[in-house]
Length: 123
Image 1 (tube, rainbow, N blue to C red):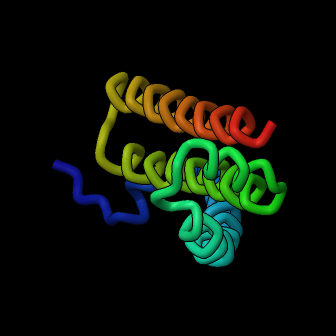
Image 2: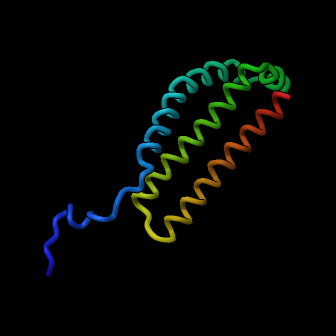
């Protein structure tokens, strides 16, 4: 029976060398969302409850369309990065890898569909 300290068990495993970069991406996206979410709420509010023609006219203007597209893109990227952290912590083995791929594909797919819908409204 071997008695190993936590340090001895972890020695030689090394780091993934991507933790700092991932942290900065999450920090920057959360700071961007801190600005984008209130902008989105205030630009989306006047359009809420309007008819289809009113919505088309509203999102034909560049500012609301750009704010909505940026909010979707940054929000889904932030979601994908946060979900990656949770999956890496709690799901292991091949199931973790498959779950990571599925979450990334769904996140980028949803962002793409949302941005495409905004582009169709705006153009």
